[in-house]
Length: 217
Image (cartoon, rainbow, N blue to C red; front, side, top):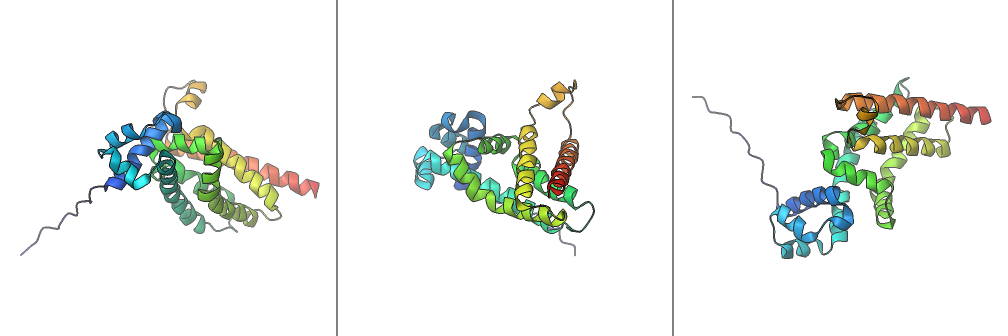
């Protein structure tokens, strides 16, 4: 007798998960100042009292949004980085792919978090504190990987290279169509096109920094 394979139905999101997801969209659409707790509670389909019970304040809710998404992004980044052979001639390209692909892909939360991500880089004291807590430990691992992949590269130059690569990511991550418009195209580029452009640009720039450092020593 044959038995039909059971289909596992994903559990519905909890109230806390719905609140954080709703807040992520609200902060992306309206910024921190423009996002209201009442509107977030409506979007999450919970009472405002429940929202305040779990998160207390808008600052705390914003912090939880960044912490949740940064963990998803950085877990994928570290997993990809761990698979890179740092002695491979193409190691630098693979390191950059590990840096760029997660925030551009599903782990990055699509359009919602990308706007928050960009704001973190140029934000105020609150954002700087979150970047230090949520992103700096992962950044240090990428800086060490750059040093290992490019013999003779100092920590100073590797950190500079990492920061400039991150800046290039911030410019394109919103996928708002501006680059395509400047290119004279109405068709949005695919994820792979954006990714390969970043990797090519980043590889060239980082190798130029490494060469300049070598000339100065």
